[in-house]
Amino acid sequence: MLRKASDLAGRAVQTGVGAHGRDRYRGPVAAFSPARALTGNDRRRLDLRRGDRVLVATTLADGRRAVATRLALHVLSDASTARTPWADVDRGSLDATTRTLTVRWVWGASDAFVFTSDRGSVAFTQTFRERVQSSVVHAASVPLPAGGQARVALRRDEDGELFTQVVADDGVDLADPAVTAAVDRAESAVRSAAGLPG
Image (cartoon, rainbow, N blue to C red; front, side):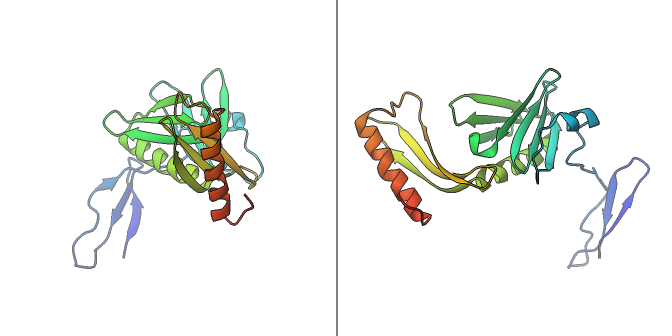
């Protein structure tokens, strides 16, 4: 049976005995509050839509605050607030050595989020990954005739509506007739796999 207590330093301490009679937890475990990085002023600056809520927030090494909510990724600096729905995030990758999450947007640009702690990077990145994946209903990679790839995804926007999204590698001309034909075939297949008309 596990019990939680607070020590004088304000950290949670978990004690208990595991299934084999050994202690499962030893010593203090740092408490974690997913929204601790947000001040009241920051919360008021968020553009939270109906049904939205903060899942995790962290302060980045450059002073910006990254906030993952159910519906969007928010990035706050002292001068600005940016809100990007999850369906506009193409992907992200974490370099654990430098604690840098590189976020690639569907329009081709990218942004680097450098975390100040390992714990913050893990908590934020896990939520980031879950929210991006929850916006993808079905996806397929399309090898293109002249090289490169495009990704065709059926995604869910923040209102729950489904739409098709095409993201191509840098240098791919989506107006090229051969590329257009390959992407159209993939889009029909993706929509069909989800039970939607092509």
